[in-house]
Image (cartoon, rainbow, N blue to C red):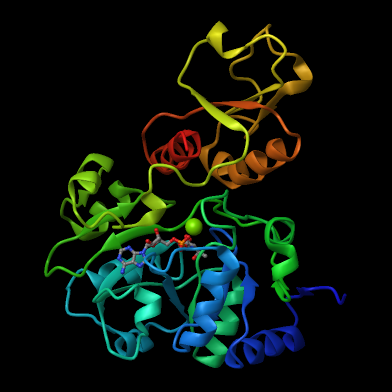
Length: 336
Ligand code: TXA
Ligand code: MG
């Protein structure tokens, strides 16, 4: 079989654009995670995304674009909050939800009246979008419910046989999925998914408080799929994940004979005599949360490959980027 990998060269970028225009699915790098991309305005192309991912059709997709001026083709931008946010954070890891225009297929939005939109910052993908004025629907390029991919080889290892085209863009710089903010209600902003851009940074730019959807509000809502990335069980490795706040590992977590890994926030943080040194790993040198986020999904996948029965992960404080890291880990740890 031919190699599925495409490179960041002008000839491969032209090839990527023509594949997308011809209705094919291509895995593309973004600064957050790799996406499973198809022409957002072509329902047949979009349908393949759901098939490859095993994603339920009720779970809407994010549309990626390369030029802000083109947003008017797919959405109503009547909220005065759009411009300041977009000026500050695009291209970048911010997704906004707006009222959609009829050109966006129902399949993309799962029949909703709103559409999720973002402009990714990865140079390869941004150039493909800009040079060809494309609208690309792309969820994270992982089987539904599994850990998102932050390297091209992650896409190959979990979707390999189904993927004919994967653009190689190196390791993702952010490592967790975009922050999602709903701007579809006049004057209001609601945080649907925490991500690399913190609630505080959004509030600073807007000069107003934003509401955050919590899982209890989500459960109370009869719209159970507000953002399925917010399903309580998601981003899960096969190994059981146990979260550790501080201090030492409780002894009941170290059952006799179990193959257990300990994943610390920094090389020098927590250690435990009861877990052998070769089973201790870390997410950063010194606890820098940007580095933790960048390595998080890679390390969860790496440890999953090693068939640990349990992965004990130290979680950060609920502050800034720590909120998004906590969120992904809580969902990885939630029982099936
Ligand atoms: O960083 C990211 O956002 C990555 C990269 C590839 O761009 N994409 C990503 O897509 O994380 P996905 O499909 O894994 O997560 C998108 C989330 C889903 O939880 C979906 O339910 C929510 O966005 N979403 C999409 N459209 C929505 C809408 N109209 N209203 C509410 N939530 C929506
Ligand atoms: Mg996802």
